[in-house]
Length: 237
Image (cartoon, rainbow, N blue to C red):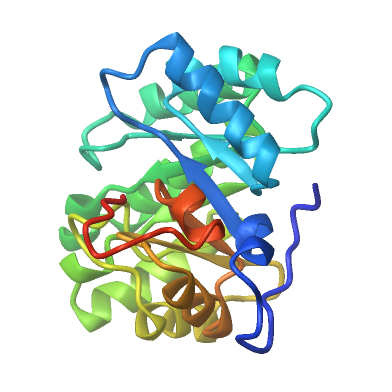
C-alpha cells in the first residue's frame, strides 16, 4: 500500500469505497488476543488502509495481515499525550517498527510547546522519525493550542520530518471536522498529508473530511461506516 494517498475531490464515494481511507482502530485495554485477530481480519475483509492497534498487539496483527497489503499502525505516548521522555519515545518507536508496524502515530509535548521549548519539541518528534524509519503522524491536539501555538506546532513538526499532520488524538479532544482538516491541509508542505481523527461515526462525515483534504481517517467505527449501519448511538474514537 502506497504511503502517498489522494483525497477524493468529490463526495460521491459509496460507504464501501471509503474503506481504503480508514485506519481501523482498536485500542481498548481489555481487548483479548481473539479480539485482535478478529480486528485484523476485519481490516483485511473490508480493505481498510490499516489496522491501528496498541504496540503490544502489533506482532499478532502483523502475522494475521501478512501478505494482505493492509498496513499495521500503532501509537506511542498515547492515550495520555506528552508524558514519555524523548529517549523512551524513540526507543519505543524503534521497537514498534521491529515488531512489524508499518505506520506510527505519536503524541507530542504540548507543555514544551507552550513553554517556548521549541528545539526540544522539534527534536522529540525528529527522534521518533529517525528511530522508527516509518511514516510518522503527529497528534497535534489543536483544541489545546492558541492560534500562534498551532502555527508553530505545524511548522516544527514538519521540520522534524513527519509524514502526516493529525488534528487530535481522539474524540475526547475534538470531533474531527472539515475546518481543522483544511487548516492543516493549507499549511502542509509537499509530501506532508493530513489524517483526521476523533468521533468519526458516519459515511457522510467521512466524505466531508476527505473532501476537505484528509487522506486518512482514524476511527473505531470503520465497519459501521463502510457497511452504512451506523446510528446515533454508535461510539467511536
